[in-house]
Image (spheres, rainbow, N blue to C red):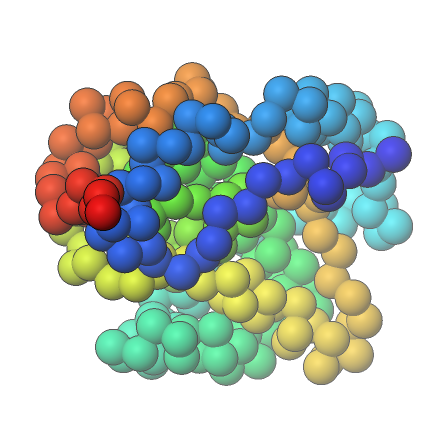
Length: 237
């Protein structure tokens, strides 16, 4: 049985205003990022998946990975092609993948999903929370899509030190959901049908220690200085 979607607490993806960001950070303790019931469901289904009770219809497909040097070369070529337009990266990635055969597209997707899982960490979620003025579980996945689209150096530097993300200029939203669909779209256009997904990407419990919102400024002083310094106190009338 899949987890009940009604148990999931979503925070709006759009960047909050300074007032809203301050109120959200102050009140977030009342609801948490993932409630205990959802966390227990995720852990249970993740365990089932890990023991092979959730299968891809194509046996062995998930064991094929693309060499990471080749993978990152494709991602960085797409980033270069898109230039300063972040939203052009998904289409640029589709173009880069358009000459790839079906087996290699599957290998690209497996490697992509593996990178999403490696970045599925509580500390990185905390960084995303500060940068986006809040971050739901779906939003954290889209944040990791954006992180991969930035290329290998940014990805690896971020995993080593999430506070290094303070080097990015402030913007409305850090996320790029459609970047994660590029390989699937190319796969379908080439007649491959639906590209199999690894459900652990959606179901895996984040690695590391869960944080409380009040701990984030100490965990990420550079990000806190950049994203919370201008938050205004709640106005009273």
